[in-house]
Image (cartoon, rainbow, N blue to C red; front, top):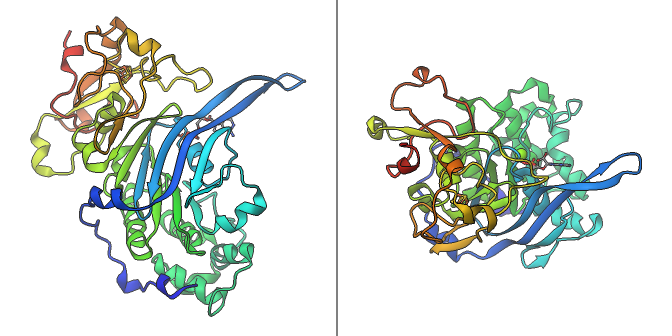
Length: 406
Ligand SMILES: Nc1ncnc2c1ncn2[C@@H]1O[C@H](COP(=O)(O)OP(=O)(O)O)[C@@H](O)[C@H]1O
Ligand code: SF4
Ligand SMILES: [Mg+2]
């Protein structure tokens, strides 16, 4: 293990760091580049296992992750986030597209060729209960990557594992304990220690706090954040809502049905979301500033579930749930395009940006697509609270009143 990786427990703060500068991120080198990435899971039917279509879990996405930044990836359940995470860490074989890591094409590297690369890219999983082997001590679990890679750290495995436990805020003397002796938050820390063992460059965290108590979530997110500044890590953090990634992301990608529908600097996305889907997700994020709580709060309730990725809707995939949908949305897929520096969106009729196909009329179905709920009052008064993923918090002042008044 190199010296520069050493972190002392005193170094670890718990505060959410000051706002990041998106400008910084833009000047950093590209660590990961993804082009046209696809994963279609074939559906086999009958005795002969005939091909009967495919689940288009990830269906052509492009993005970059720069060294030292955090890319947040959000979207409702089933939008392809985990599949994307497993593709970029090469736990899954892509159907099409290209993945480059440090300029090297790793799209179809075999297990042997990937082994040395595995040191550089690690994954943290959602469920700290099932991702740790209950029969192994945490010493064995956190030390496993050294064994797998045939690496002996300076001072031996035990000493290094104990150092890692300290780095993630656990007692190094608990080396011989078993996973069941730890709380959920502590288990996720064990998972983080294991992911950090080989000093990776990139860590993909798939809903790292979704399974944890809300009171513990911030601690684990803060730990990830502290470790990033201390170790120079690059993160892809997946979450199903925008509240978790809010403080730690430099940029955010919003996924819907296997596509990236919006990709923007954090500031720009929160201040002026362009995609209607992002706007609905944002309306579910509580306003953190108590002074603004008195402002009229509305949430956008999307009706219905995410359609099946086996046969996604034509044109814009969001048109079946969008309150701004017009005829063109049903037939033409909007390209992901930069409508502002550092802000890409795939929408014909974006919010907070010029209409890309003006003169179209909102369809009758679109007028029924959402429900606006006033949440200025306490949640208990609202029987509809929690109905869909896009529930909670406040919408910005330009909530689509025109399509909901009638
Ligand atoms: N191994 C698999 N085989 C078939 N379908 C899969 C597989 N993994 C995921 N899917 C499907 O792909 C879609 C996207 O899943 P996933 O990537 O887990 O989404 P998310 O993480 O956003 O919830 C879902 O419809 C899911 O059922
Ligand atoms: S306005 Fe049209 S293109 Fe934009 S999200 Fe809605 S349906 Fe899609
Ligand atoms: Mg997932």
